[in-house]
Image (cartoon, rainbow, N blue to C red; front, side, top):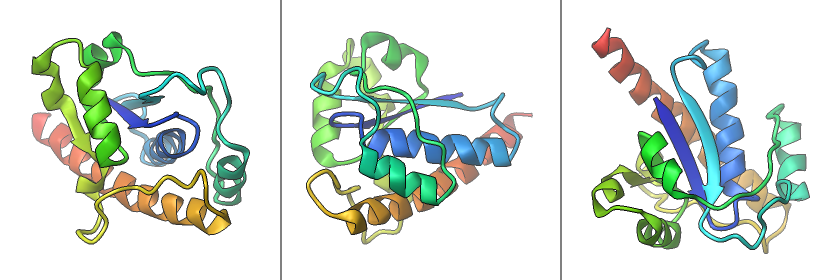
Length: 158
């Protein structure tokens, strides 16, 4: 099973979601059954590392954040079982990037996995440190709930 986390530039939210989820996969010893990656819907930051402020906030939580920004591509739609978007704009933009309309059904809002009063993962890029902390809190909650659901599915298939 493969999950792709998607935000706008792939330098804050989606790489943090990927790193948070990857850490959980390792902690639960399921990294051989479930894999993940991240991408953006624009190429503006392509090749850049994650935002230094997000790196700092993630490091404080012992979440290893790495990689380089990239834009979602056609292969991602074929490889991923689920493409999770951080906000409604990302959902709309990623839907436009789908190489085939039948693949749009793989796209789902990340916030489907968080408490009902949170409907988007806010972009912390233009905010202060508290914005990055808030994003990491939301990502942690959503990644735990997502992994719980995926593990249930995997166990029922065994």
